[in-house]
Length: 194
Image (cartoon, rainbow, N blue to C red):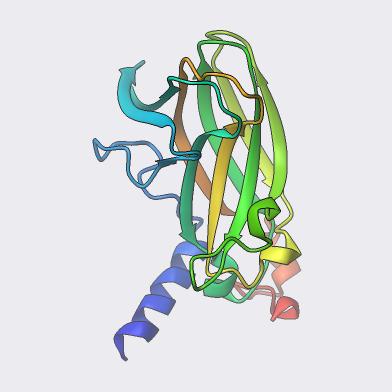
C-alpha cells in the first residue's frame, strides 16, 4: 500500500473510533499549538489550574471577533460520509461574555469558503465572571462545507471589547455516530450515506 492509502485508512479509523479531531485540545503537549488567535490581536499562553492545563486568551485593545481558533482536516472528505459533529470543552472568563462558536470551511488554496462572511455560527454561549462552564454541543454538519479541505472552529466575541481573560481546556470534536448498530445493519458506516 502506498503512503496516501495508509494515511486515508488511518484517518477513517480515527473517525470511527471517535478520536479527537482537535490536536492538543487538552494542551498537555505544553504549548498552545495548533490554537491561534482569531483576529491576530490576541495573546495566547498556558495556565495550570485544577490539575489541568488551560489555554489563556487575552487582548490588549478592544476589537470585534477576538477569540481563538483551531483548524483540522475535514472529516467528511476523509470518511466520505456526513454525520453530526460534537464539540465539547470547559471554559471560564474573567468578565461576563457573549461568545459564538462557529465552523468555517477552508478550500484547497487556503481560502475561506463563502469569503469573509462564510461559515456557520453553531451556538452562542453566555458566561458569568469566573464561573466555570462545560459546553457540549452537537450540530448538523453544514452542507455548504462538505467539500472544504479543512475546517476551522472559532470561539469568539462579536462585541468590540477587550478580552481580559478567556480560558479553555478539554477541547474535543468528533462525529456523532449512531449508537444502535442495527441502524447500520452490522456495518461500521451507514452505507446509505455512501
